[in-house]
Length: 433
Image 1 (cartoon, rainbow, N blue to C red):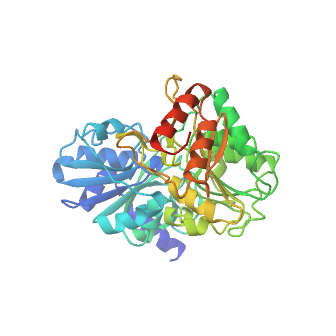
Image 2: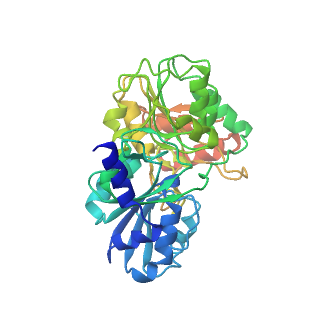
Image 3: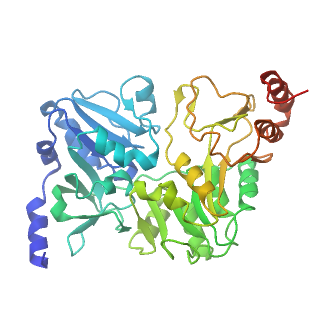
């Protein structure tokens, strides 16, 4: 398409946000971009015009803003969550929205097979001279649908232009509108002494030339801070956070020893502060790929010395990790933890670290437990878990017996709970004597 043709196509498809209503059918499934990929003004228009709609389901992971329809306050609209956040957790507990169990790598395929996929709505960067928008700080499931599902997009002037497999041409959209608002930033939490000790234990085991994945949270970010003296690290991660920026700037990350995508940081999501958003903007060294690529354990396993770092809520004597719920009280969903835990242990010299505090915040309850709370969802299961880390040490579980696992986990529990845990282990039959 020539430059005049691109300009004409952009002008022809430019619309007001409320035109999105023309593309949402009765009983349709609308796919909403994750995080900052959710188009705020388009969602405003859908809520305002909901009287013209009926039985519409809006599918999304990790919303970053409160919405009336999420809380069941807009007749005709139903929020379907694929990963809970603080903005839809209460709605789920109150039965006002639905939650679909999944592993993040499987979300594009599930959305393809289990929904009508009537429309994708997403926030994007302004188009370039070739007529391409980018999905900005995101790729995930939306990028996987480019060319297969119609898009209605919102050009947010604050969304950085990025590179990778998240490019959307004007010919693939049914309409676009404009907006101008700040991206949501994730505030950092002040680290505790236990956070620092856990991070130190993990960082000691990260080798030069390793490829890193770090999940969301204080401890994974602290680990990244401690790797500034490493050499030739690579990045292949579901989530790109501020901690990775520091590693690039220190020279620790070069990507030269990666087996795939040498010299590139590969991710599917960037979520953090304005520092991170500025870093990824117009940066050809960072590529955003669909989540069914970044989180495929087979792709992860192709990188030697892969290191996966993820957090959990509770671990039992078998090594089962409950990372998304305490009992039946759901906090999030599986995300990419099982994808990366599996991929890392399949990689040559790979390591997977599951991190947690030894106790709850009040210190009254051990997070190393004989058995998970009733109703708990197992996120990383016993056959996959590799190393579990608390502030008291590292329990190496992969390839160990149940007796060995139990003893090693008790050894990294808080000292005041160890005697009781050992007693329960003997009752269960996992320890003798």
